Image (cartoon, rainbow, N blue to C red):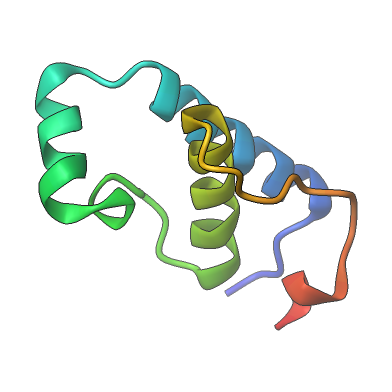
Length: 75
């Protein structure tokens, strides 16, 4: 799988943010029963993490904000 760029990861974060602020009632029910993972459309670990961070920040769960390139994205 190709390496994701910082820009791509920032767009994935934004996707998660948008998903959180535009939840439908059905998605909210899914979230309550299956957690965030049930709504995350990404398969690659770093992409899933970034989407979840964006989603969590928009929902106000206190997930850390992305502060630029970080070694943890290379794991």
